[in-house]
Amino acid sequence: MLQKHSKQREAILAELSARKDHPTADDIYTVLRKSHPNISLGTVYRNLSALADSGKILRLHNGKGSDRFDADISQHCHFKCTVCGCVSDFSADAGSVLPPLDRECFEGRIDGYSLMFYGVCEKCLQK
Amino acid sequence: MLQKHSKQREAILAELSARKDHPTADDIYTVLRKSHPNISLGTVYRNLSALADSGKILRLHNGKGSDRFDADISQHCHFKCTVCGCVSDFSADAGSVLPPLDRECFEGRIDGYSLMFYGVCEKCLQK
DNA sequence: ATAATATTAGTAACGATTATCGTTATTATT
DNA sequence: AATAATAACGATAATCGTTACTAATATTAT
Ligand SMILES: [Mn+2]
Ligand SMILES: [Mn+2]
Ligand SMILES: [Zn+2]
Ligand SMILES: [Zn+2]
Image (cartoon, rainbow over all chains, first blue to last red; front, top):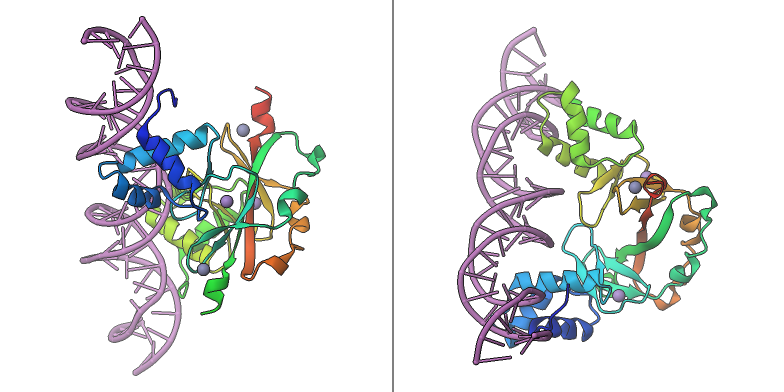
């Protein structure tokens, strides 16, 4: 996978890297249509999936609703507003607190975790 | 919602309460068909959603793959095996560690969180 | 340049879930 | 107990996010 370069993939990664709002595949598609009028939604999905599989970006499963993507691949948590649906980085210290788990009572292997907080964002609270 | 009693909802809740494997809607549907040959998959989905909305059961978003449900509504974490797909309760102390977050740098309201660990379960490791 | 092939655009297909709708079961009222 | 009101049902169509397919195009190696 990812053996040949493509203008489309470059544009997708550039767009994702330029923003911090954890966009969906369709969000990116809508924006890129302006500069790449013929780009296909399937191409956006295919490249985002390939980039995520190769570890270059992060895929955030989002319960109901579409997946979101993140160019920041460092371990960090997220917060989702249950009113407006926005997803933002969450600078809690939870991430640094979690790793030292008591793995003694668990015989499997832990490769990672996903931690999502739910609530109401500042903007929605003020309405 | 949930204004009238129904045999189907009773059976769905009973089945979910009797197991600890976090079944999908279709899992429950398949089992209940034996005792309730005419039950509809839509009915299972509708009741599981209503029960989850009213807080009587828990819905676990599962990334790709269908949602799973849990009759244990206490705050607890889960572990998903990326090989066989099984989802099990995870008795880490992470849940008790998380609540005291530094909420000072966050202006929104946190209502809860979902924490899922990924890895390989004991059974799959032994193969 | 030529050849090989990964990637694309466009579109069909898919799986999970929700919506619709005429019928049935539950509950309240007479 | 019969009647009326309506929530819930079963069957199935529709929706949504995503993936699969295919002929054409773009990239890379020769
Ligand atoms: Mn992020
Ligand atoms: Mn559980
Ligand atoms: Zn909000
Ligand atoms: Zn396993």
